[in-house]
Amino acid sequence: MSLEDVIGEIDATEQDQHLMFDLSSEELAVPVMNIREIIRYGKLTKMPMVPDFIEGVINLRGNVVPVINLSSKFGLIVKEADKRTCIIIMEVEVADDSVVMGIVVDKVSQVIEIPDSDIEPTPSLGAKIQTNFIKGMARIDDGFIIILDISQVLSAEEVAIVSGIHKEATVED
Image 1 (cartoon, rainbow, N blue to C red):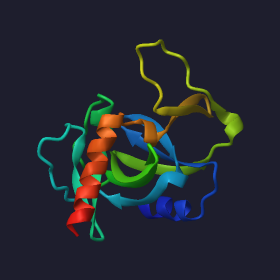
Image 2: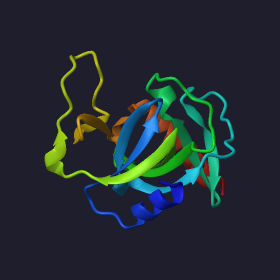
Image 3: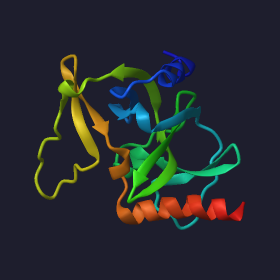
């Protein structure tokens, strides 16, 4: 499925639809309700003195949007960007604040409908293992797909950094 086909499917979405994407050979999904758009990976402006997983910022129609590399954030192998690498532009509510950010993924694959009845709760992996960023585990064929809760991927301190980048750029306009 081409990137244009996937974007077309997002335009006609329902509440239980999810975008599937690859990240370091893992298949993950996010609810399409949080997605503003998907763009091809392009020129990023690096930011000094930010955590390594903040890959930089992009100019999206005059707006500065911070871009997070999920592979880096999750401690996975970071692949070199290629023609299938995309940035998913998302709007998430974090601490009563709306934050627009991009997430780098290796490739988007498809939009799928996952009824709530096919989503299992996140398994408990012990007190020391953080799983709050996992919304649930969707049963797909013989396996599971992890559904991310993007609003929980970043810590409060990290959200403040990303939100600060976005707000500083907005004030400068």
